Structure formats: C-alpha cells, structure tokens
Length: 449
Image 1 (cartoon, rainbow, N blue to C red):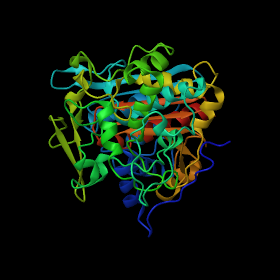
Image 2 (image 1 turned 180 degrees about the vertical axis):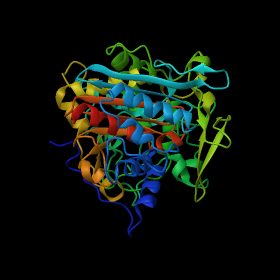
Image 3 (image 1 turned 60 degrees about the vertical axis):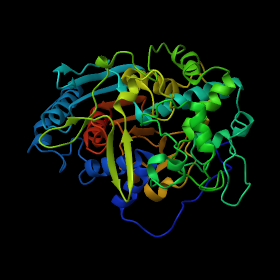
C-alpha cells in the first residue's frame, strides 16, 4: 500500500498566487520549500546549461570560465564553491557527494569562524535545523520495522494527553502516519502572529532558547492548541516531528536523545550528531548577510518574515546540555553524519530498517505540494521529486530533497545512486542563493552526461 494512500488531502485556501509569492508562503510553513522554489528555477531555467550563470553571480564570465575543455568534477565544483566565498555569498561551506556508496567529492571552503580566522573543515559540525528531521524519521523507521509502533497507531496511545481540539470539536484521531507526513493539523510557531495559540501557549520551535523547557512539556503545550484541520484532511509543514520525538521516547522507554543514539547513530557508526555540543569552538559560527560583509548571528537573532511573522534564532542553544531535544530542528552534526543516514535510506538493504518501511517513508503521497511547488510531492519529512522538468531539478523522479533554515540542503537520488549535502554557515540566505543548484547541476552534468 502506498504511504498514506488513504489520505490524499487537497490544498487549503483558494485563489491564485504568483510563483514567488507561493514559494515564499510555503517557506514560512516549511522552512525550505520557499528556498526550493527560489533556488532551483533561478539557476536551472533558460538554457539549463550545466554551469548556467545567474543574476546572483557577481563575477562576469564565471560560467564561461568553467566551461573549458575537460574540467574534472573536482575542478568545476571547487570553482563554484570558491567563487561563492570570494563573493561574500557564503562565509564557509562543506559540499560532499557520494555515488554508489563511495565519496566522489568533498570540499570544505572558507571559514568556520572568520573572526578568528579558523578554516572550515569537512568534519565541522553545524546546527542542522530542519535537516534534523531525517534523523528523527529514521529512528521512527527503526521502531516501525521492529513493530514497536505502527503507522496507524493513534498518537494518544503513547501520549494520552495529546488530543488537540479539532475545528469541529472531537474529530479523527491523530495517527503516527499523520506526524510523519505533516497531515496532523499541527502548526509551526514562526508561521503565526504573536497573538496566535502557539505563542500564547509558549510553544518552542526548537530554534529559540526556551530555558527550562522539556520535550514533554513542549509537546503538552502543542497539544493545548487547536488543530488547523481534521487529521489527514490537509497538509501543512509543522512541529509534528517534535511530537514524533516524544512518541519515540515513550515507545522505546528511554529519552529521545538516547533512543536516537541507540537505534540509529550507533548502528550506523556515527559518533554524532547530538542535541548539543560540549565544544563551541568546533561548531561553525552562523552568519547573516549584512553590509559591508556578513556578520555573526547575535544572541538571540530575529529574522522578520513580513506580515507580522518572524523567526527567532538562539545560536547558543547548540551548547546548552539542558535544551529540550527538538527532533525537528535541534541536532548538531556534520555533512558526513547526514550522508550516512541518507545512504542507509538509499541502499535500503534491510539492515537498519525493513525494506517495506523504507519504501513507505520514501514514497510520494501528498498532493498539495503541487499547488505551490510544481513537480514536488511530499513523503515522511521531505519533498519527493515527481516531475524533474516541472520541478526544474536535475534529480530523478522519486528523489528526496530538503533543507534547513540555518543554510543547508541535501538530496538523495536512488535511481542515480547519488546523495549529496551542502552545509553552509549562512542563516536563511544559504538556502536562498543558487550555490546548491549550481553544484548539483554541475555534478549531474559531469557524472551523467
């Protein structure tokens, strides 16, 4: 049975919107679909040359300089990354590609801490933001494979208090499958105004500091807020993954960080990531575009999203051992950590999760993304490429892709045997520029043409 074949919700709202407005609105809901919409078409439209330049590139002739006879994959990708740092679009970044289980490219460029002149390295940890979700989904996949939880289990079977009020009163139960693909009717703190229910309940989105808050208490606060719609009847990117983390903790019988380590990280031989770092000097400093040059984030740092919406970042959260463990946004890890999980999903050999569960989690099943992100569906915490041409992506149909507001984007293309991760230190703007799209387009041109 296709994943969530019984629940194919339709888009909410009505009326038509321009592409840029649609992508921006969805990014406020989804951290990253805004970036996917602005990121790929800008760099991949027109001639769709493997190294097509764009208005975001400040160096005349940049693309032409790369289109010399016989450039290697390494030369082409190095040049793109180096130029992005030289132009000030990025302060530092790591881009790593794996093909058929082997690293075919890995390059760290720029600075981990520009003020202290510390260079970026391939093993630099970053605040993962929404890239954290692939780890939480994978942990849930292990429990699904063991039969500890099931897709159609009511969340209230594990969290008896988790019965948010539906719009029409007592409604359908929220199932684990609804948490996985964000059809539970939940919301995200930063996409509502300050007088909204999540703000009034003092919900944390996993990016702010929230001193003294626990995962359990945060989930109880989410449960106190009304649902946006009946479970399974629509789609909205939300804090469902944070609720899933608490379900995992209860079902496994250990705190969520321990469950993540024992069920996922140790079996894959991953030393990290973790929900906090004991050594701040090792973690990439996060920057914000500013004049005359990018500056480190303040503590806290607020980004206005317009219309009374804002995201509040707490960079220091990553160093607080008492910060509540957000499965949706709270992990600290490296590009290699991310790739090991992506490769476990891509290979799908049954050693970590059952092949059936991996197929279910990877399946495209949610229709509403077609309204705001042409060619993209949604699976379990990530976008799924339906139509490469419509999505203006070089990725094969069925590929998975997602990003995080701290500046990172990943993809996994099972058909091509390719996975990749771009980690940057540019908060918000790291997923708005064309660095990722140019790197991926160049990689596909070199490897498959």
